[in-house]
Amino acid sequence: MRFLMVLAALPLIACGAIANGSGKGERAPESGTGTARTFQVADFSKVELAGADDVDVRVGPAFAVRAEGPAEQLDKLDIRRDGSTLWVGRKKNAAGWSMSRGKGVKIYVTMPAIEAAALSGSGNLSVDTARARKFEAALAGSGNLRLGSVQAEALDLDLAGSGNMTAAGQTGKLEINIAGSGNIESPTLKAADAEISIAGSGNVSAAVTRSAKVTVMGSGDVTLTGGARCNTTKMGSGEIRCS
Image (cartoon, rainbow, N blue to C red; front, side, top):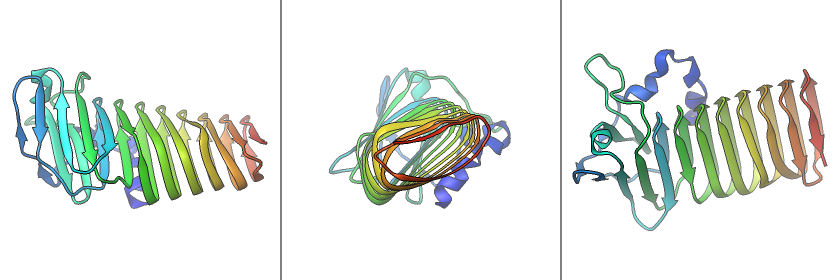
């Protein structure tokens, strides 16, 4: 959960410091020129994107990281492994600011398994498949985070800001926290039990079959299908629907 707590606090960090280079871990050696690069990095189980680029994560038999885009933008990529986390961002200039905040770069990541994904900024992070005892996803900012198919005993989704998160699959215990106007719209995500908290105008949708504890403070709406028994607390104009 500490991985998520750090990401959820990112909007409070002045000037979006995480998008300006992590300053930790080892920078991955790269090869290639022009509009395609390959990065030699392995032995990670989490992926973190900082900034406005697009990252596509797919589960496969071996580790691989490659990037495509304009050569001048690829030159500014900063890809590192910090412990068990693959960090994708942009290099810093001498003043400590990111050399580029523009889009146009696509990073393709292949890894045997993934247990956490995080995005800070306006980029897009997509994970095709996740199989884990516990999977964590966090989004801070205006970007988009998509989980294609999740199978996990426990699934934690945290969102801070105006971004959007989607997820599909199954989990035994679902925990969702939203602070801001972002949405977690996942009607095809099925959970046995859920604990959902919204502070702001964000919306949540999911399917819960057994029990759900739902707290809404603000104008956000929660829509749960699946027949769960709902224990609700509400302050504000938001609506909670359980069916």
